[in-house]
Amino acid sequence: MAEEAEMDLAHNILEKYGPDYIDTKTGLPYKIETMPNLDALDYIDENKIKSSPFLFAPILYSHHWWLYVLDVTNKKFYVLDSKNSEPRRRDRNKLNRFTSNVLDQMRVCAGAETMFPRMTRNMVTHSLFPKYIRVPKQPNAFNCGVYVLKYMDIVNPSLLGKKNFTVPVWAEDELQRFREEFVERILYDGDNYYRHQAIKASNATARHPRPSTALQIPYTQLQSADLESGKLE
Image (cartoon, rainbow, N blue to C red; front, side, top):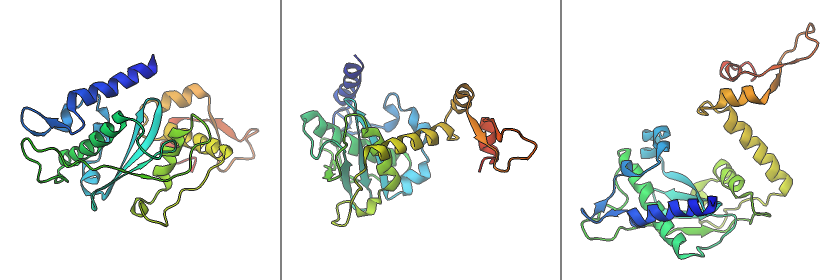
């Protein structure tokens, strides 16, 4: 049921906006503000979106994560996918086109110039068709999200498409360690609205950086305020 609901959401968005993201009434791109469920826009730094030469866009579709990378300067579009080395379904090609157009309109919303300045009424958008970068394949059916987070963590986007670009082959124990590290970083991040509740519910403890000899146990109940104060650094 969850997969069907997820597929329905993606299909409904594509059906409503079309892969070219063009309003048939005006012949112009839709405004990004009209997209449903875009609470993430509240967290976007418009200055960074407008000035960044690269944009990363992780996406979840049919229970699988992969990463889009938009090279704004050179107008190139890449896919890093730990499972697929090419689009294997027709709807994936539509999603690729849709994503490049939405990313462009996010930049326009932030005050940047469109990457497709020649687009006019009744003209098909100049979508960027992505190049699939060869990366090592995941060893199981559930680590795709870890791969996407690790791509964003270590990949130098300026090397994408070049011969000297490589991604390490990670063993399953390394992937598990990455998973634990990312969980910790997400949990303790200042933008995590539920950070305080999660820490309190977990009964987490932290070691004192300079435990006193008077303390029988050099650990204390971890509070979210401790993270903000820097006491644990």
